[in-house]
Image (cartoon, rainbow, N blue to C red; front, side):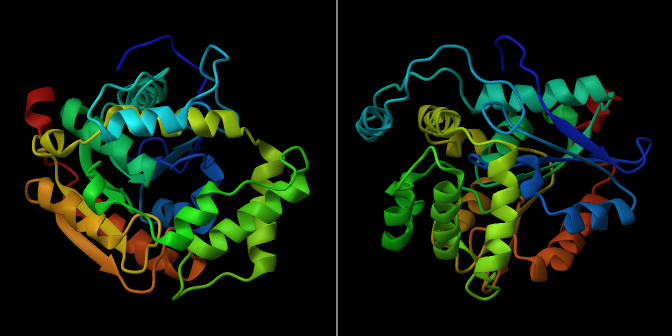
Length: 302
């Protein structure tokens, strides 16, 4: 967890004196991908909620250097068990979260991560447990490639590109199609809802080169199962039964590799945060955090 510090764009919601929940979002997703209703539901339950843009995304800083990420070469090297070179790793991204906690005067927090954010949260909980009250890993994986492969439709849409990457409307059309494939079949969003939400994100910031570097960080970080076995903080794993991008098997694998972890499987949920599920997700996370307000390795830090 080293490297030059970067600017991290963040929002802090709720009373700063309340227990903190730090939200870490996934690949290429900005802080606004944590729905406002979800965040406010946690605030209403007595928590300070911090959400932020990961490095190389949104309004946060970009990684130095202009070398284009060679993802095909990285994936081939990873498949052969060879080291993968990357500008940074998930460890560095976990360091960003800790640096933000330091800036905000948060000694320990409940860490909640989604997708790639779940991977970052896992690293943080394993390597700096004295900073973590509890861990919630959502729609994420352990890095075990055998159980993390997307469905064919999800893979196809992920490998596709906008017809005109320089045209915001073309980019929005592409992302609407993507989330139509990877979203929750049990809680579908209308095309109009997707366009509105995605349009706000694209107009705020859009950087495919940054997304590629984030993906390279995931590939370079490899299989984390041995690391997950060292996690000692209370852990909740949440996964959608209908996730076509990171299948349920990956969620089960994550829970099985973290000692004492609980697994919550949500029927009809894919790889998104549908509005209809936000009350249930907020309640599950608040309950988990509430049960472990003073647990974990706090004695070492007290």
